[in-house]
Image (tube, rainbow, N blue to C red; front, top):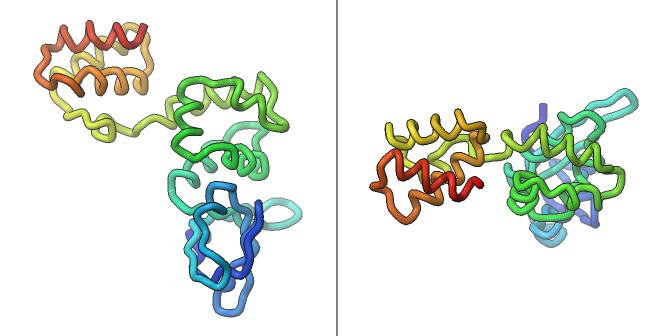
Amino acid sequence: MIEYINGKLISKNQSIAIIDVNGLGYRVNITNNTLEKLPSPEKFVKLLIFFHVYENGQELYGFFDEKERFLFTKLITISGIGPKTAINMLSVLPPDEFRNRLISGEVKLLTSLPGIGPKTAKRIIIELKDDLGPSDSSELGIKETSKVNDASSALKNLGFSPLLIREAVAKVLKNNKELSTEKIITESLKILK
């Protein structure tokens, strides 16, 4: 497994970067977002790598940051989405914006991409929605307390997804961290409905 490539950037274009590492030139598929962050040729660069092996060959996919590589690896787990399609999808928007639009369920964004129909777009959103949210409440600035846990549990019992619950609770607690469990629930419900 190749984790990253660190070397001199020889050339770059819209979808490919050539990186020289000790005399070997690596051809790396990249997104537009990574392209924009690359230095000018002859400067050193480090790209995080996804090494794809398939029946007739091998390819490297490079990413400037872990967020983009994470999204890429999640996208290719979906039936019908290969590495080329995933790299094209991630070239549309910066990783954070792409992730937020997936979480909010924007089918239109996905169906505007070549090769993605309405069924595939819905499948992508359904399969990735919970995976793409913050992994825990601390990433949203929520301190885990019994009140927060009780409120989250109650909201989950009402059928809301953990991701939406975390985001709603974070918004509620942003203005007042000393709310009671009941108040956290009622204010979160206003956001969730």
